[in-house]
Length: 305
Image 1 (cartoon, rainbow, N blue to C red):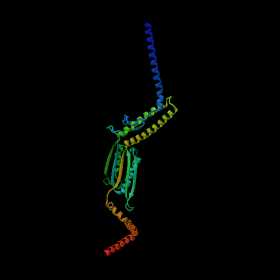
Image 2: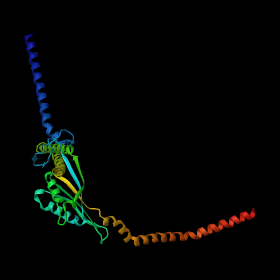
Image 3: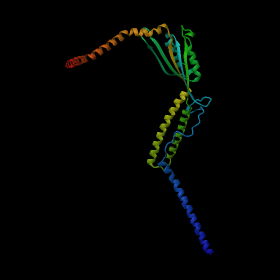
């Protein structure tokens, strides 16, 4: 019996050892096959959702976003309508445009500028519009310089007729861009790690390199969007409409326009009447034939009755 028990104990120990060796071999094979499986199926790029990266307004290599004290980001637009005598519109427009271009302290950038004359040559009406972008601290000095009187002009001759300020909250856009950029960067780094593994096949490496290139292009596009948004947050847009003050001459301008265009209007009306007559001429014989035919039939009906 002791010999039989000893034999059973040895057999049980051997079987247990064989099971553990098989389990370790299976785990080793699975671990060795993992890099190849990752190389064959690298996975889909992450979606835009998920946790967002921090955004505290500090400057780093990828941009400089400024945030309000409330922790939110805003884009500000100012619209001004400046009224003055028509003789000073061009001079004030050019002075404001040149100050934005030539004053480095303002850090000003011209977005659009236009000047044109409307009306007849003998009584033209100037119209000017200027749109600039500048930091918040430069808005007040620029407006002060804009309202300064020109030569032969008093302070009361120029005034701001309308002022509209709008604020757009872009905090969610900032968070979305940061989150998407962080996820794409992480995805690209993981693809680069897979490409460095020696167990990957040539076809898998080609697919991984293509995925890295596509992800890098998307990252560069989003970085461009972030730079544009940072520019919009850092600078406020100021749009100025230069308007001529209403005078008696300006009030009679519509009458002068109609009088000067009276011959053209008369000629257009005469042309319309002539076109109507020419269009009716081919139908005159048809109308006459129908009229006399109906009259002849009516007479026959009356005589027959």
